[in-house]
Length: 490
Ligand code: GLC
Image (cartoon, rainbow, N blue to C red; front, side, top):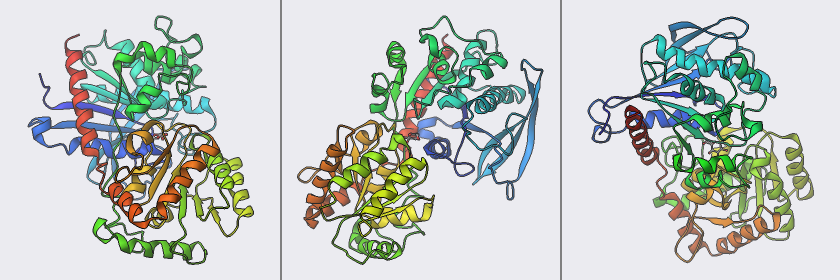
């Protein structure tokens, strides 16, 4: 049985291009469009109606944004009802709904270091998204939530839907982009908004009133953003203390790899790079390397391999591993550029390496999207030594731009990069999160690089990979159908 005209309520803390901190925004910005663009042979004549709801963060630029109010309601709270309002706007032709209300303070950043403040904001937002569809009488077949911020909606719905005809047929899907962010600190916010701890389920004691664990407990289905991460979440190394609990839900856990916005990331049309190129004109790529060297004030040298790291400076990303690993192979011929901001300690570690090897290593600690593009288009290798990586985008962008990935074999990295072998593979993988093992993988890559014929084959295979959203959107659509159908049968 197929449900025609499937209605999906899609809620997230951030979505590009309106508001972006991390990879979640790329997914929440691209997936709904990709779903809406699915052909009617897949969706049926009535298509699919995906409504994206976001908090109306102060960081959202209001200057050229036309928005109009579409709903107003109150959310109950221990201190008395709190008013909420929803505005409708269009972003590149796509309708988006923005929730405002006192807990979504205009001056507050998207995420603060104060988990209590974030807990109040996102619990309010989660409940307001449910109130919004009720107020507009638009009953969804699917509630699709992402990470801890919107998990309270999943939990609230599970508490209500057996007594509410409006949500009786709504199935819930929770996508995990980053398991360790459990929403610690939001416990009292949940309580104040009337969401009780859970004592019936199988959550460990310490997790019974935390947003993500409650979402994982109550969602009809859980998916991770790669198949490997879906499995890894159920192991002690990656499970953030919830692996045992997650194993009890293994029949309801799957993985769907994120796609890449192939239009935005296209070396043939990218306006930020000096020379556009494709698989047919790969030789022209080296001009980008020369210009990048000039831009970074490195002496020109087309032959010496240029390694790159483009990353948030975060423990997850293994910046420290990369720095120490590169130090161990400083005697080999390479140069490196590291671009990224974040943890000051990691920034300092990277700068220290540059100070020790000023002609080899350049570190730029700022966010610069255009420079990132010029690096993808000009560097030879992109290093991604993550401790864990639910999906990861940089390795996919690297491959599309002929910048060969050297990655740790975890999560989405493992699912998107194939180990180099004679005439096959798209990059280099290593197993343990350890500087020497990382350095060994870089050395292997340097070896292959010295044979330009083999290297070109590697680049071309990467550039020919199809990372478009289409395939993943089909998988989400099929999952939605299955969950909605199961729910009707309840
Ligand atoms: C998080 C994960 C990253 C993933 C992104 C989008 O940022 O760390 O691996 O690609 O979410 O799903």
